[in-house]
Amino acid sequence: MANPQFSDEPRTIEPSSNKFRILIVVGFALILLVAILYIPLFNSWQERQSHEAIRGQYQGAVYSIPIDNTEIPMELAWAGPQLAIVLPQDQIPPEEISIEIEGSFGNEVLGWNEEYSVYGPTQARMDPSKHYKVEIIITADDKTLWEGKKWAWGVHSHEHHH
Image (tube, rainbow, N blue to C red; front, side, top):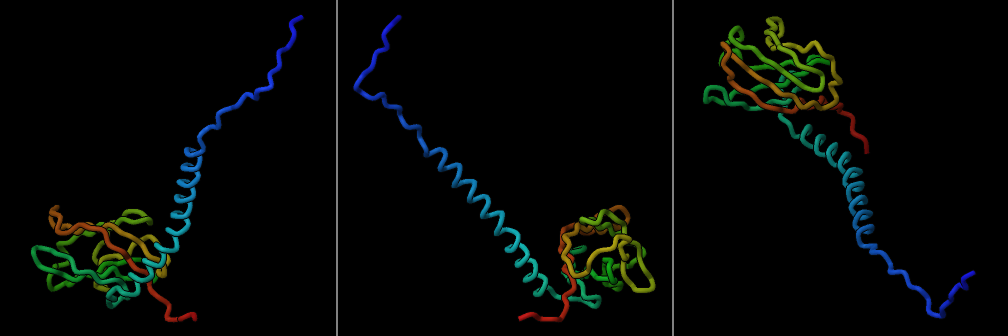
């Protein structure tokens, strides 16, 4: 039987580098912090933009869009819980226009509504106090007159909490 050999000198184990672990933990903490702050900062930005938006006849945001080298007002109007689009009839004859709108609610083609002089409203129902980013395509005779993304800012209640 072999005799075990003992030594008075301790065997040292080289410590592994903790720098990599620290970088991972710090990186994860930063990602978590950004994720936590993003939501309230984004909501605050939306509310500020919504309050500063120019409002039209139907309490929707009014944007100036270029059609045939002319700036034309377009309102993303609220018709109760539905969206509609208002364009000036004297500048764009309604019978020539087709408007497609797409958002989190789906994709719809809005027809001319003679009763209210608007395009739409959408079939989809939404919360008019919330904000929706929409993509709009305005066409005439299969020619795109304007295409872009805009915010349909929700309607504000006039109550102020202090």
